[in-house]
Image (cartoon, rainbow, N blue to C red):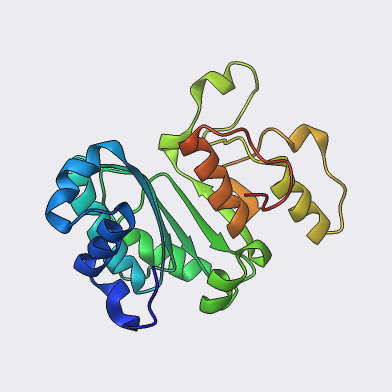
Length: 209
């Protein structure tokens, strides 16, 4: 969403809604008719998460589909929503304290920590952890592989990157399975869940989407 005219417009759900209406070529009152046919994805940063979640809630209430809302360092923003929400945090403290205001089953935090702006500007360089809660356990996978509670499939590219950072070779036995805390980058984290929501084949390159 362009912010040249008003940098604060991203804080307003109304302003974000006006932007969506213009992008769809309809007026604000016509959004109700347009909503059921459009599946929206929101990528928001910092205080901009306020406007994004307000607009997403309104869209959902109109009968529209919200494929996902990615909240990048939306510290202090309550996110207990009926649609998929993924938090990305620049450090573990932000991740843990943000979860107190609402978190679903899968989030990301950078480790080692990066700056607030670097997480947004260079997500492909922000190495960290995908943290998966109990809701994400795939029970059918456990029939084929002896996994500990909370295990989650991961992208091989993300694991390769983590191993390279540690100066290790990729362990083939870990390319498909890992524990609930999975090494990845912020960019790969977003790509993975976008691919799943859009039912796209996984990318083979790191940060490929």
